[in-house]
Length: 197
Image (cartoon, rainbow, N blue to C red; front, top):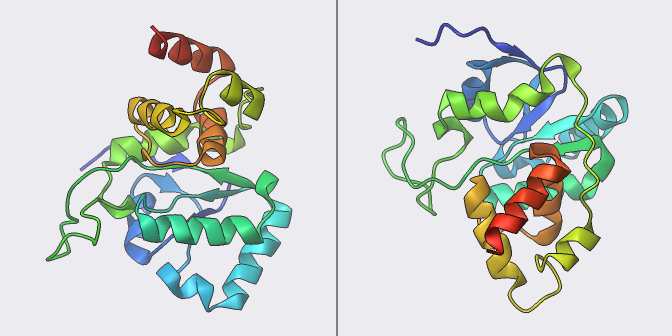
């Protein structure tokens, strides 16, 4: 068993299901809410709750990296103002959750299958209400560095995602938001410089 103290996360965290919730509760003390998978598309009251919560506090979104997780994330992003969301991403790792007899449709692990250490790393910047670090990274940087609006942009983004341990098929906007949270502007510049060598 892990003796490490649980992280205290002041922001509500939105995950897909109860097993994701249980996994996060093993590493942090936080208000963890579930979308009930695709239930979020049918339950207007749940979406209304998330909207209201978003007016009072930033919300962390942590869905699986598969197609279903992306759909759920997209639905939440269309309902809650972007500046109220902290979007965290798990890497795409092949495997099967222990409690399941079959792997998921895409054969990748969800939030419930992630190592505790990885989840701690993802959440630790937000412990005790520490502010999201300021990062002036912008769409202009992405364009200048060939990560959007260019011939090989999607390939370059995939390479960068792989290096960062993120899902390789992220859109330019999603990757931009993730990088602004995960690394400083200087770290981004260093990574881009190394990739262009």
